[in-house]
Amino acid sequence: MSVIHETGLITAPVPVYFETFAPAAATARPTVVMVHGGAHPAPAINVPPMAGADGLISLPNAATARVVPDWPGTGRSGYIPLDRLDGATVVEGLGALIRGLGAPVTLLTHSMSGCYGWRLLELHGDIVDRLVGVAPGPPGNIQKAAPVYAETEREIETEASGQRVRIDKTAPVVPTRDFVERKLVGTSRYFPRERIAGYAASLRPIPPNILLERQNVHGRQVRVSEPGKLAGKRILVITGTDDLDHGREVDGAIVTWLNANGAKADFCFLADRGIVGNGHMLMLEDNSDEIAGIILDWLDDARTSPHRAS
Image (spheres, rainbow, N blue to C red):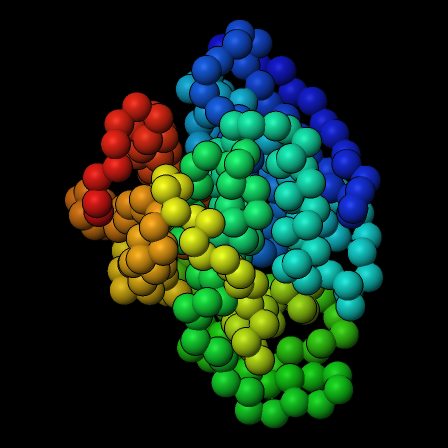
């Protein structure tokens, strides 16, 4: 299928670089905005070089337009001072991009961007018709605050993924090899181990405010201010069985909270589909096309059928 590739940049309220991949022939499917997680360049969620496949969402073959942005202040979106670079800034920039695209839009988030997705759905629900969260971070409304063991003006000692960590609040945080192997790859059966070194080399530093928000240090995680605005929204949360920070109970609690606030959310824990062994980076794993098929089937079903409780 012929695909048109274009690049773009919005400049206000903050710069956001994005790529567009659109089928040459018109399609009835909504545009999918695909938002990467922390430490990852946008291509990781779109066409990952590590997997030897088309990635988590093989959308060109599904006649679906994709828009793939870099977070504000990261990657090709340009520089924002670290003291101004937080989740609220990311949401502001992505929201402006979404509004510029017009309705309807399907939003796909992964990992750390999951918390931004809930807020974007609240603020731009007139445009975002469906949301897919792949091992998504929870909203601050329900996330337990991380402990603070020590803190100075420059550094803080807290906890992440079950380990005590010391974070320099004035500098981007460089992902360590231990972080890659414990958190991102973990015990996955499907991540090609021979590609770990190349994958680790592709990662980018994480802005410190964003990392501390993800751990909900001092209760700073991005929150949904008016959860009732999520009512009626179709949402899918999809999670692998071998994801260190995203067990059935953890991500299932997000779905429970969403439905308690009127959303129409489904939970796909892959073990319930007979798929066992996926870790955190579903789009980089050997069965990524199978996962893509599940998501695409859900997107089509969500367009044509009433909600079925998960």
